[in-house]
Length: 266
Length: 204
Image (cartoon, rainbow over all chains, first blue to last red; front, side, top):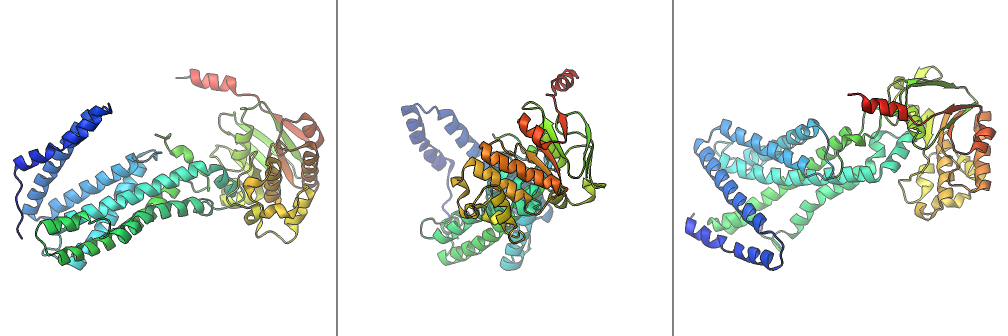
């Protein structure tokens, strides 16, 4: 495996490309200059930090440190799910629930992928666990966000029809079944599109990364196929648990719709 | 039949009243007085402290869907969850839907028309027929004739009258004095809870 190491000078050279963005912003008076600089600075600092953290954790190869980073990643994903909502679920339950669910999905799917299928030595080798967990979590997070957004929006929009069904004696599961189906479909579709077009329209980042790092393209492709299956399962689980959790949080045992538990639209 | 004890719907003060079998209670009051909230609380569609009994059984003693099977809320603005009303009329005793629609001056063909293509009055009468389909014991009717012409309104009134004659109870929210005269056996006047809310706002 041979990689051409990049020097800070190389990166500084690439950073000059942002002059294009800045020029367009300036030319059209978009006032994006500050945002461009800030986003670029955040990107560099965050990536540098995670690089240092990963270097440290890879050097330890300790289950404790690996687990610590796993917990941080799942919590961050949970926060993202809740804050990205157009109408947020009030209270800490939503945050706890999404973090815990993502942690469970991430650990279950990553363990299956790394521990059972890839089988590195030791099984918790952070070099395998953390990147795969990151991809699984990222996609599960997106699916859960989509499902929650669609479900909550549909409940608000269809409130009268759902309450009409409840008033006629329907159980909550029955009354929200239309909203649940719509949101599950929304959450599960992106991975299907992505599986159907990958390799033709887009070369996935992990695969290109491996190829750039000098891996045999066929080996890189095999890893990518494995990852796609893992991601597909993770997004399905995230969609299911997200929809189920939102249904339970936004209805109650007396089969009432409790939309007051949603914050006002952002 | 239906007994309401210290029921606190929304910002309304706790209310206690009873509606006997075969009786119609009219609820009057200006817009915003909480008439709809009261009906929703009785149907257990909103959480509300207090107790509601149906023939001696408190609402929490039975699953909510069963409670709403007997104590039926019919909203002022009916909503549908399918393109055509037919779906909501499935599973009814044979002939009952047709009889109800006929009594309300509707042709059975409306069941297969798109809800969006029906008139407001047709939708309102369809919703009443839908609510009466499985013969609930108590009807909570929120302005059941608000969108109707006088002829259709008369048909609805007649149907409500038949329901009470058959021993069912009704709670009727209406702004129509004449209608209340014709249908109601008792009245409950809700005033706008201004004094209550001012007091609540003044409290620290």
